[in-house]
Amino acid sequence: MSSPSNQLARKNFLIIILGMNIDDKISSVKFYVDEEYAHLKIKNEGTCLRCETKPCLFFCPANVYRLSEEGRIIVAYQACLECGSCRVACPFLNISWDYPRGGMGLAYKFG
Amino acid sequence: MGKVKADFEYDVVIVGGGPAGLSAGIYLGRKGVKTLLIERGRFCGAKNLFGGVVYTESIKTLAPEFPNVEPFPCERQVTEEGYLILTERGYVKLTHSKEDRTHSFTAFRAKFDPFLADVAQRAGVDLAPKTKVVDFLKDDDGNISGVIVDRPKSFFDSSPASISAKVVILAEGVNRVLSQKAGLYSRDFQPEEVVLSVKEVLQLPKGELEKRLGLKEDEGLALEILGFITQGYPGLGFLYTNKNSISFGIGVFLSELAKNRVRPYELLERAKTHPFFQRLFEGAEVLEYGAHLIPEWGYKGFPKFYGNGVLVCGDAGGFVNPLFKEGTNLAIYSGLLAGETAFLALEKGDFSEKTLKVYEEKLKESYFYKDLALAKNMKDLFLRNKHIFSTYPELLYEAMSLFFSAQGKFKREVIKEIITLIKKKRGFLGVLKDFLSFARLFW
Image 1 (cartoon, each protein chain N blue to C red):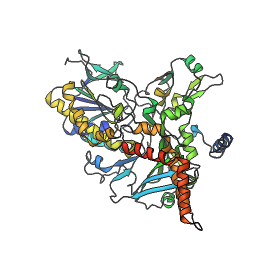
Image 2: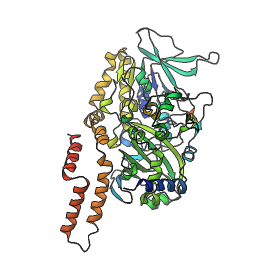
Image 3: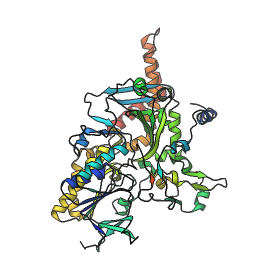
Image 4: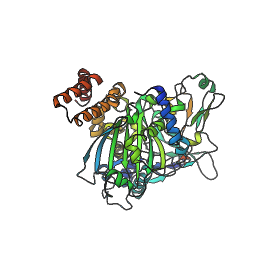
């Protein structure tokens, strides 16, 4: 087993050398962004502030959920891959979840 | 059943243009049933993602001439299939060659589903893409008798259009929100019941795919990857060869990602640092990234498959057998059975539960329902027994390393070392227990 500091060094290595960046990955996906309808919303911001683990910052495969400098959760629904994970894995079920409107959102070229 | 007023009238409305919905549509279209298929994506397949391999046998039930179709909707025939077991630096590869070269093909959803949509359209099914079903239409007795969509009634009336149907077939995919609304599920699924998969399509310089994997141009590889690929978390990786690219992905139970605060795409990047993949993916370009949930609630989480005027099939019904990589074909088979049942109900002129119950009987007779009943404890075993994803891959690799590096050593000593290794890593009792609990799944 590698030690925690080893793991951290490895992680830094990954980020620097491989340029691992979720934004790069997301940029390979085609979206028809619906500017008029945000299909993901936080139900109650206070609940997020009280949430200690904030797992949405991790499990979301598109990094839709990000932390602002003031510690609030920001929802970048435009990059959503519509997988549905946040609908059930938010520990407080605090995300109001819907699909984008018909024809909007993600459109895979390969899938 | 009371009469409802709607803007459009159909005999059957299908929600979702994946393989399940399209299969139901193809069956009904060929029977001359007035059928509408509603798809929220820009085209059938636009929202869909899988590993992925499709099996010829199930496709032939929809298009008997397959694989002799133009343009060919798949990528490569699978000629080598098996497992890649990873430790941090090493690997054990166990594959078999496939005699039947038309048995299965690698494919992309966004290219394969349009092929099925074309078959459905030629069978006479009306397709309505870019349309989302937002609610059900109900008759006076509260029975489902159609759907309401997020499209306006007409140019002059912007209120949502309604479409009446005698039977609504739900093929909405893993996020079964309408099926829940229809009362077929009593609750939402839990993070323990789904696997979150992330996948990349990686393009290699021309000719490199064949060179690096030892394949000919008409040969393809399908690998399930176990061990270091998921950092020991319960789940699997996969690698499938397309024409000029590789589909590479990792799926881990959503509950594990959430609990351990793991970013799924970091698992993907970390896997790429493994010598096996470093070599394979050198100079590769990411054509597309994507993510999808795999329904693994299985037998224990099965819904009621029918209600008054409604049936559920495909992922929405939980028809995935992860151990045997069956998803697309179960979607096809369950979709066909839903189609058959809807047709039967139309012939009888009765769309109540009493008639639609036939669907459940048909399902229970199918091989895949029996498979899922047999493996009903599998998910619990995988979540409980994490040795499968960490201890055993390491054990296998180290045992093989000892076995094959024994020059200058008395072989009895080598065997002793291997036995000591097993004792240290898991213990004989542990191995026996694991073996029995796995074997019990199938007996």
